[in-house]
View 1 (cartoon, rainbow over the protein chains, first blue to last red):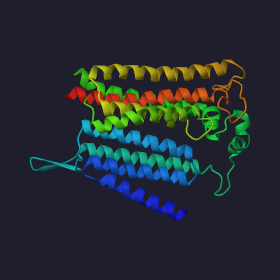
View 2: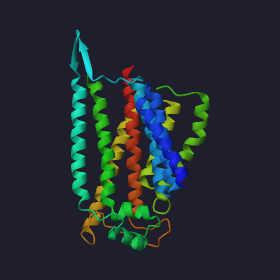
View 3: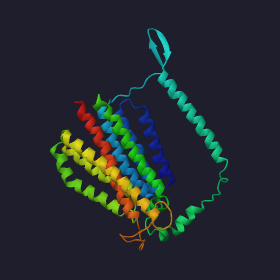
View 4: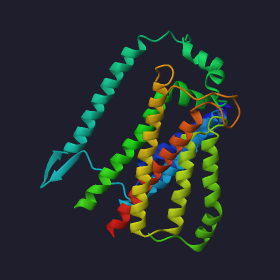
Length: 185
Length: 144
């Protein structure tokens, strides 16, 4: 099974590399589908049907929504160079400079917190997930839910689920706000 | 927004209801089998998106159903909060307390508030994704 997983993951990597470099955005979105559906097969092979169902339906819906976005915007990739030439003089493109600096700051901050948090972890191979053991052994009796994933998501960790639902609300509010600017003009 | 060809319309007429029912099944059996509110809600949203894409609609009606679905989404998440608060007020002081009787595991009506949460999350996710799709469609229509 590891060999099969490795083949699928290589295919996913190829799909994502093509997605980054494709000139036509529509073919980029289709190639991005390779990554998503490969992940679905990986989840099924690793015996996680809950995740597989969620992944496959979300993949299809995001494909539709991204094609809708491409229809209302543009099909070609409009990347800017690092420098702009105005009247024979080369200037640094301010936007790409801002991208670069922000990315660098995020990488440094992420590395800092990563090192800081890994210092407090257990040594490799030893884990002390006491709550997980309780969930596995008594989850069905405590929640009454035959599907343990639903029991954890909606009973033990219901607060997390509320946060996930709030993320969707925030996304909808953001999209409606951005798309309304044109209507008000 | 114009619809698609007769082939797509006929296939949608046959398949649309089945897709919607499958979404309902995934949502209501979330505590028994794999799936749950998020996956089932997305399938229900997919059924509605299929109908809009295949048959098309005029923009005034699309605007109205966008308002309705965005209202439905907010009502669903408000109900989730109310149920969490009810769980807080009854019994032990825990947010999202499972205050209904648990019943026997494996039956359709069991697990206290988990099926209700699944249904509400399903409504919320379906309405949210459908609203996002309709927002893009209406934007495209207004551009013309």
